[in-house]
Every structure is written in C-alpha cells, then in structure tokens.
Length: 358
Image (cartoon, rainbow, N blue to C red; front, side):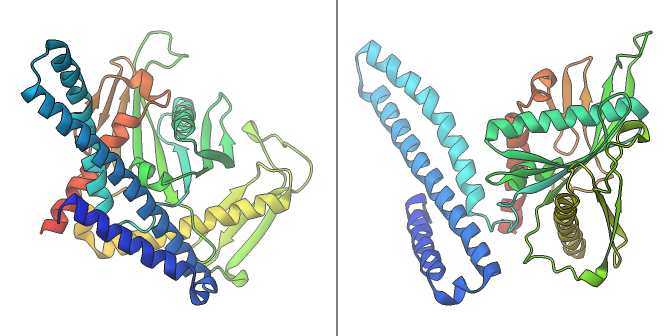
C-alpha cells in the first residue's frame, strides 16, 4: 500500500470515527467518548503529516527534474538548494508518517505526571534534580505545554528531594515517556574547592495522567491524613492543616501534597497523582506479562535502569540505551532536547516496525 492509498484508508477511518462520535450510544459512554476523541486527534495529526509529506515530495521531485533538464546555471543552483532542503524534510516526514501508521500506544496522547527524585549524592543530587526540572520545563515551553506543580520537597541548599509536576499538552507522554529511569551527572560542585568531579544521580518517572474512568478508587481503599505544610529543614510553612497525605490501602502507595494553601486543592492533586501511579502500576504488570516487549532498544522504563549520563566537564550527554552521544549538553539542559528525543522516538519506531515485520 503506497502513501496515497494509506491516506484514503485514513480518511475513511476518520469518517467512521466522526460518525461514532455523533451517535447517542457513544455520547452516553464517557470512556468510549474519550478513546474515540484521542483516536480522532491522532488521525487528524497523521493526515496533517501526510499532507506535509506530499508537499515535500512534490518539491523534491520538481527540484530533481529541474536539475536534470535545466541549462541555466542560476536556476540549477536554485534547484540544488531546494533539493538540499526538501530531501531531508521528506526523510523526516516519512519517518513520522511510518511511526503514525503503527498500532498506537493508547496512552501516547495523554498528559503526564513527571516525578523527579534526588538519588545518591546528597545535596548535589538534589541540585541535579532541580536542573532536570528546569530542563523539562524549558522543553515544555518550546512545545507549548502547560506545567503545574503538584507536590515538592525542597532541599536546604536548593534543588529538590522530590518534585511532581503535571505536564499538559499534545502527546506529552509520547515525547517524554523514554525519560523514565536513573539519570547520572558528573560535574564539579560549586562547593568543591579542589576541582574534583563528583558523581550523583536522580530518578525520573513519567506517568500517563489517568482519567477518572481509567482507575476506580473506592473511598474505603483510601486513608486521608492532614497536617501542617513544611518547608526545607522541617520548618512549618503555615499553621493550618492544609497538607494532605493519602494512603492507598490495597497497594500501600502514599502520596503527599502540600503546595496549595487549600486542603481541598491538595487532596484533588494527590488523588490525580495517585490515579496516575495506579495506572502506571497496571501498565507495568501488562508489560511484564509480555516480557519480550521489554527487550526493545529504548529500554523498559524501569526506574532502576541507568539510562543517561550528563558529563559537564566534557559538555557530553550519553544515552546508554541507544549508544547516543551528543556534545551539546549546555544546550540540552537549557531545554534544547529535540535531537535527543527524536533519536529515542526513531529507535522506538525501528523496534516496532521490526516487531510488526516479524
């Protein structure tokens, strides 16, 4: 099936989705409505990529034809410039289009909960966790995503022991899902007087944001405790019992939120985080049941898996899962993550295409 035939098939599928969205049966089923809405958005984006690909292919073909037939040197130079621009664009859009044609991860279109925790390395690890948060925040800004602080525990010297943020925007999970794992940093801390390089670490968890229809939590499964919010060093931030701690009794999972002054807002945020963690737990069980799928090039997303090293003295970032090394760490930590994320997504596409072929 060529690209044109695939586009016809996609448009027919889009018509089917739109007909279903207009039916009374679907309108009364919130979960089905949400699923079809995400599929509709995915198809619209895929067709948009197909249109851009067709345009780029046309420009490339015209440039190639002009180079063959044109005698004028100036026109040939213009054609060569056009070919130099359109050929890489065709390659990039072809990869994007192929990835879109693969059976979609049903969670790719979701917003996410981004959790960052300092690991080994004491205060330097907490500072690194803060640097990772800034990196993701600046990348989110380039994507037009909205970030909201859900919970945070700051360290005495700056940075975070733990921070959880909500990231809302188109396909946030699809772009950031490969960030889960252990991140290692090698650099000279500001407090180091002898110039020695220290190694510390932080862990990142990227969880698809759960909808209320995904996870049903009974009131009897939750224990809610309230307390005064505390800041670095344990000092009280306010004197009202606004901080909320949820205990999910069946799993033992605990979520604490204290950033809002309202107890109700903290409770709502804690429930959102809890649902996302429970959804992630269910997803992990499914993946483990299909262990062969966890052997992909990009890795399993296991929090204990060391995925990346940030070497500041050498301005080097290495992603160990795909043997990628970039000497632009200074730009990456400021949010210029496009090349890194594109490489991870290409590896995912290649793995999935290979699985589909087999």
